[in-house]
Amino acid sequence: MNPTVARITELVPPPAPPRPRDWETVEAQLGTPLPEDYKQLVDLYGGGVFDEVVWLLEPGCPVEDYDLLAITREREEILPRLWAIGEPKPTGLTEDGTRLLPWAYVEDGGQYLYWLAGPDQAPKEWTVTINEGRGPEWESHAVSCARFLLSFMAGEIRSEVLPESSGESHGFDANTDILR
Image (cartoon, rainbow, N blue to C red; front, side, top):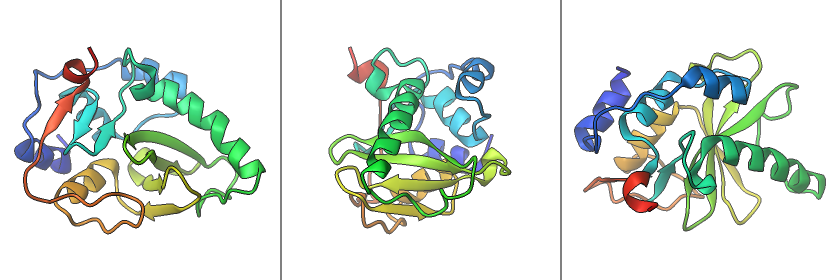
């Protein structure tokens, strides 16, 4: 297990036995492999919300608003339209073949957390890029999604676009409990 994912499980025990996904099919639909730490998080937790803030998207969620594949399609339609009318692109998206892939969402503020995926990068090299949601600001963090999540929960991430975590008590609410 990824050491950062292992640390997250110490802070927030997974709610149920692991439920591995058919990652080969998911990755084929996305046209790219995904980071191992993300796949481990989803296999252990499923989709749901950490610390009542960061909602982990999962493939196959019955509610499209929290489904990795549906949100990826939606964002790939919406973002180019915004850029066409003058919204700024995030730094690093200028290289041909670079794309944004959403992996989490902050419901109250509308922020999406993406991977900035370069064409010559392995998924473990992707960085977290956040759009403020209801505005044009972008912010990047040169860490993996699991490292970002752990640092956010610990109150170590400094962000202009995300709410602060208390850094004290932690929890996870699974989609299976929330989205009935």
